[in-house]
Image (cartoon, rainbow over the protein chains, first blue to last red):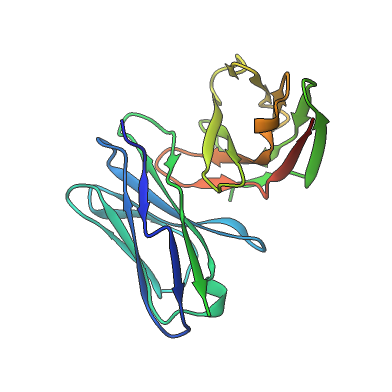
Length: 112
Length: 113
């Protein structure tokens, strides 16, 4: 089975721009979670989608949003980028009858 | 809210020796899951081991085993016969069903040849 894939792997943007990151879960997995990883704050939960519905949300501003499609693929969007948004964004998928999250390789976002 | 604490920021071990990484957590829940993830320099987060809180038996996966003390809210990872490829950052994580993973700050493990 193919693992979780994330595109793009690297991204450079400037302040004020917006960005969209994509995540394709493991085949058959319906839950997708997003995390932000920074040296200062560590790993922080952004949100989780299950069957196209946001099921949980972390403590991030409204500039961070996401969605999930009928094929379980998920996107997250960050608008009006700030320097502090520079981070590794990790996506994880979970199967229906399991509690284990499997992670993708991440998207490294740099905001200049 | 659940919290996960990894108090050691880094450790070093000689190849072929055994090392134990510590983790404590705080929760008022009774049913939950605990994980150790490994993040090598490639940054890919890899599952190492999983423990269900309602199971008293400690989980093992080849050279990796845990010491789960539910009453003490302690969940340590033991790596036996350390290998150079074990060099990575290790994260302890807590999960409650249909919720989110809460991670500790991680510990950097270096395996010396």
